[in-house]
Length: 160
Image (cartoon, rainbow, N blue to C red; front, side):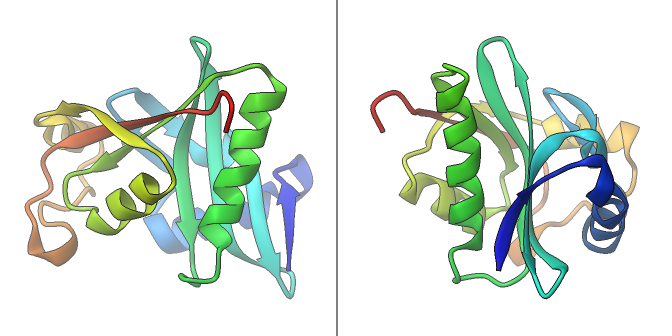
């Protein structure tokens, strides 16, 4: 198993990963519309196959995680990828790492909060607005929860 930086050489693999797991590499969230296959990030590979992936953007003195996926949960893949992103932020002198998740994603909320991320904002109806741009976003999310809102989480990585 290895973690590699996203490069032009592995972007085709990343497009395939997003199509398989998200339907497309396009991510529509309150902070923007992103083509995740074009973003910076890291892949976690095993036997030359992507089993984890994180993408991010840097803007306004903040590193924002746009996507985080782990195909094999409970093995530290997501944690390792987030550590890589936090290290990028530290190396670039960026103090805040942020991300957006949805109101139904209880697993993600638990994952991020256990790693020091705090909910800093709730954006009511953000997913409903995103759905107007990307109609393939489902109405019902995880656990049968209506998918409506976004939650912003942030971590101050200075001194961590």
